Length: 225
Image (cartoon, rainbow, N blue to C red; front, top):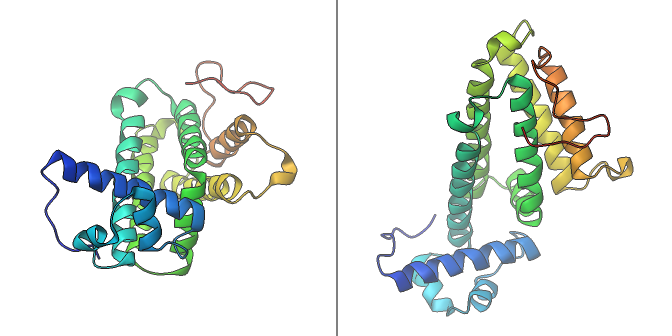
């Protein structure tokens, strides 16, 4: 775990910590969690190794601090993207597309880093694993609430269970396709992937047809909801 310390008050200290977190993420993306060393992070951040050890007890503490910071930021981003203000006018089908787009584009933007973190979480129970699981659970809970608020559009006889399974399938498929390159033989670009995953996700919830024309076109391209 990270060494207990107060958040940096001086702008120079904050800048140093930000640089350290960025460098940690870059090394993880390049070498994976197992391949990271404090020396590599120090070199990339242009920080003395000793400076890192004044903040963190060891390599694992540094990685855990990075994961906590990264997934806290990810929670904030998803909360903004799925806020009541942004989703208020969406029916369930529009919400389904927004969720799929958010996952695919988010995974694509941080593909190398996230694949390294998820691979680590699958093989080693530690603080990073806990942050990954907590972030996934928070995202699922937020989406469950949004879809249940549109319960009238879900014709599935057990909507809570349907939502849980649909999210499990969606997230698993998005991770495997984007982070780990599975399904490359299908030759799907991200637009195709978003379109097909949206169809599958909506079908698993047995959503009523949207009141307005769907944003997914026959070609597989899409437009923002």
